[in-house]
Length: 255
Image 1 (tube, rainbow, N blue to C red):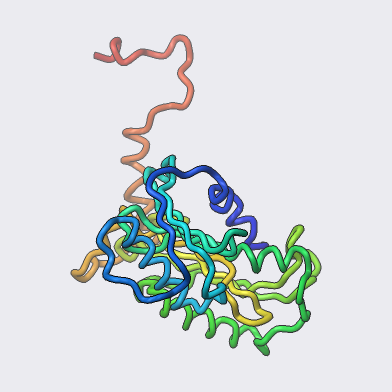
Image 2 (cartoon, one colour; image 1 turned 90 degrees about the vertical axis):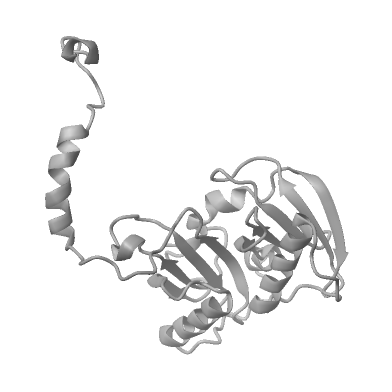
């Protein structure tokens, strides 16, 4: 599965309007401690870029705006580098952590096949996985998050990619609610994708909000079949039919 598809919906939000205070900065020059929410978002985005070692131009102009509409019930800060939008970082509305990153410049190079060598710096999948796991630690992916999937292949691999035929080394991580991997399929967690040609970060996505992970030891675990056996009677008791026939009793008739 080409990981580009997984980001199609997320990435589509990048180019849509934002509004509010616009903060302009210049490169990574020293600045006083952040005071306003947009300054905090900018500091978080810059720290992310530095941790990920993304090669953006040191003198590129940086723009910070608040998204004009909600994404999953929230309005993140959008930080863009360069007049040509070399990179985009979306920061949680609290300014505390990065929820999405897109290396627009590298993706453009991949699609247009600019400066592609066709070679990977990783000799095998194990090396690629170890590299991405180290990057995940540097980007503060929670230690409790488990590796949920990993994809690794080179440029022009048959059956992989769409308009972008570049290779990938991509990992998905997941936090299991109360230790049960089948309670919350699809999240919360993170996705990290790097270019196997040189290890540069291409995409990042994370969602840790609305999740409270218990500090105390989890209760005794049930198997999936045991949990389903306990849950099925309650589901059948409380579920509502998707469609009601004309002669079915209404709630009023049932009293």
